[in-house]
Amino acid sequence: MGEKTLMKGAEVIAEAAMRAGCMAFFGYPITPQNEVPEYFSRQMPKLGRVFLQAGSEVAAINMVYGAACTGTRVITTSSSPGISLMQEGFSYIANSDVPCVVVNAMRGGPGLGDIAPAQADYFQAVKGGGHGDYHSIVIAPYTLQEEADLMFDAFDLADKYRIMVVVLVDGLMGQMMEPVEFKEWVDVKKFKTPDWATVGQRDRDHRNIITSLEILAEGLEKMNFHLQEKYKIIEKNEVRFEEYKMDDAEYAITAFGTIARIAKTVVNMARDEGIKLGLIRPITLWPFPTKLIEKRAEQLKFFFDSELNAGQMLEDVKLAVNGRKPVYFYGKLGGIVPSAEDIYAEFKKHIKGDR
Amino acid sequence: MKVFDVKSLLDKESQIFGGRIGSGKTEIAVNIAIKMSEQNIPNVLFDMDIVKPYVRIRDIKDKISMYDIEIVSPPDITRKIDLPILPSHIISKLMEKDKQKVLDIGGDPYGAGAIAQFKNLFPEGNYNFFFVVNTRRPETSNTKEIIEAMAQIQDASKLTINALVFNTHLRWETTGRVILNEYKIVKDVSEETKIPIYFACVDEEHQNLVKDLDVPILPLKLFVNPLPRLGE
Image (cartoon, rainbow over all chains, first blue to last red; front, side, top):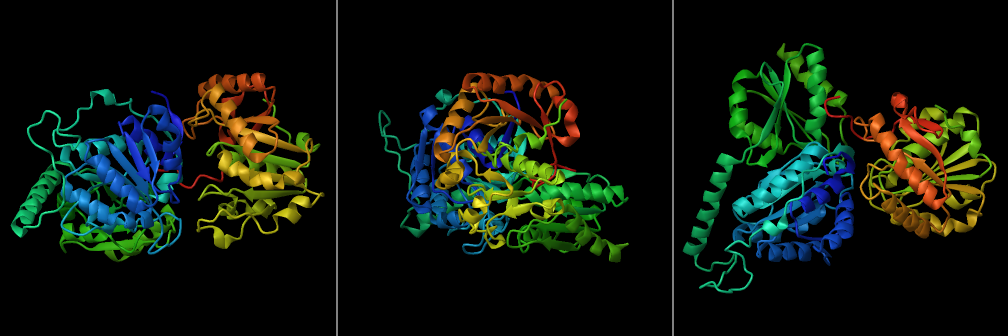
């Protein structure tokens, strides 16, 4: 395209996924991300690709699992309650070493909750969610341009590590509109079927079998060791973050997604008043930028974590800081998004005692 | 540059704004109501959006409260649940004759379909049905797509589109070149469909961008945007 288009976040997810070579969508509608399946439903047939509205989220994720076993670039998108329904499938996908991309446009919970933006599925996305010892790579964009670019990376990372990649956004990131320039279309004709894919034995001398089942404990332990080895490599190679005005910072906000976006404004408000505040924004929530935060703890007086939840990423920040500096928190619950002024006022409460 | 005068609409009782999702209907409907109120033209603003989950008229009520506009919208309690609800007193309000009615209907055929059930309350010739178009939105970027979208939305609404509104913009990245170049696309639509462009819209802080257009301009106050530009 090379030209800017005014996009809704949900449309960005679908358009960027198609350009990145996504060949199949399986899903079930849920607000606030219905524009994703709607966009796919109009465009995928034109490209000769698959759009299928499943009977439920449980069916959808198992269809994703099936498509992933063939080495096809596949996606599902949903929002919090729908993602909860998919957890069993995520766990199977994890122990089957197959690649796929899942987008969660988080809304207020727990339970049915509401349709307003939230970030309360951090634990679920980052710490597993389904059963067993597994991880998914979790990416959290904070602008629609970044969302457009990271969708390509999501599919590449999924293929590279044969892993599920979660793109974790909130409802607002799905609904807001910004000018976006997309990368060029990936030439899907150049995709090769991976040698592990279950697409028929053909002239191979063995059958490929993909399963998460291993009835011998020793065998299952081996499968787990393999996963843990893979996670170590990912933790070493794939940590991504952005730092903003951190060089001389005495204080740092830690935030991801929508709140990181608002936090950038907060940093500028503080700087205008001569307060040396910076922002640490994890882009990958797993693997988490632990080492960076560990390092920054030396220079900072305190950390101030802000999220649309009761303090979830907060735990990872605290683990990284490891008690060396205070970590304060400000969160909004139930789908309420704080303004930059709200966050700044909360931050300043802590700075008073500090100065 | 000629500023669009809302008085030119008064020969019709209802002003209906439809289009693709994200074309700018809500912002424009709100601004038309504000302009009417500023000129002491009694009006009612209808929130008939059953599609969009956030930033509908009901969500920006506080921001426009100073303009003395009567708003007919679903009850506040429905703001954060997922129900395609229309205001309970909508029929009696649509039947009132003494006020201008400004209607924001939801985007796409799904949204436009919500008004079809009230077809009998909109006699032909007594309403303007504006098709709002931003050529920088996906699926309305060329003449063919726009005419297709118009046909679908008209079909779903059971009403007749009789006016185009040119609303091409890229938020803070809007340029005069983009507006001028893409105005031609909507001009072509107008010529092909014989449906006139009533006015063009622009953020009131960037009116210089539209000075070369040959239609009246509606400068917009912006209310709908949920988050400021990054870092602002």
